[in-house]
Figure 1 (cartoon, rainbow, N blue to C red):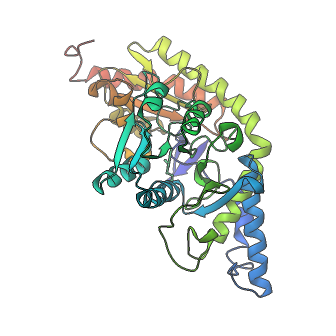
Figure 2: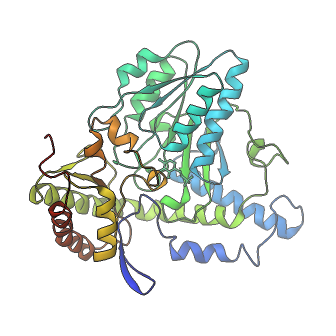
Figure 3: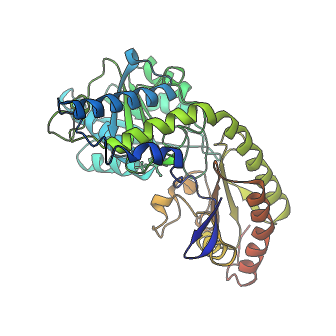
Length: 400
Ligand SMILES: Cc1ncc(COP(=O)(O)O)c(C=O)c1O
């Protein structure tokens, strides 16, 4: 996808950070800012029209997660960060009363789960951080052995935002249910890219976000299985089943619903197309650029994600060079963590040394990525890596 930024043409390879809103989605949203501006809680006809649209959108989002209305409730939130905060802290508040104080998460969760867990630790909760193997796959034996009578929740992400690894969620949720523990998955990266089915995965709670799948920013959702209650964190007029009060973001919700409807039809073709691009990039780069290695699992990974480390250079320098010299937008680590000076906790968890972790970049593709874009990337990447290696202070001092 070529985009003009200050007059210069840029090629976007950062779809795991965010996607453009599909123009068809943006178009559908427009009338909910102006003509259909009603408050869904108003009982007059303009309010009723907004309510109807919100409820239809809710059904579209639930359809994409293969959830029937009888399976549970969908709570609209401002995004995955809020949904993840609600589930960890909302359940912790409830658990406290039941004298449960133990949470289990994986060691490669997104910062919104990580930092919520760390905050809970400060409040006196105990947290187990599950190991992952060299591909980023969570250790299920450790999961089984870590569960105690005090465990109130296990949260393991469906797909990792940095290295794209897809976790064995069905197996993890089964272990939890066999031990009477609730299970949550953060599906912000997988939803709309691969099949997400709450019943097949066997989850009690699922987090999703619109801006990772061609919907607008600032809207996401938390799905909660029927019969399970949590404590709300935001109190007010009782919106969203009393779990997330505040007037609904109607245009955002409509956009999310429509984006889900489009994904339902278009996702599978895109999955096939991007998997071919992904595997072509991985093969070409690792075979032709010396000292370059794939991070994450070769097959159990998101169709649109490539994460590669290049010894002797810094990923951030490569990101900037690719942008400024070649107009290519990639990322070093996740967008939400890339302002941090430390190496990514995900890359450290899969066993990389700090100097290997900082040499990694994430290339992520989407709907508007073309074969021409991929070939251009493959043409310029070796040149950019060589340029940085030629001036690298690490070269020759590296213990391989
Ligand atoms: C796995 C994962 N969880 C949560 C989030 C946060 O999503 P949002 O921007 O909707 O708050 C992201 C976004 O990068 C993510 O990749």
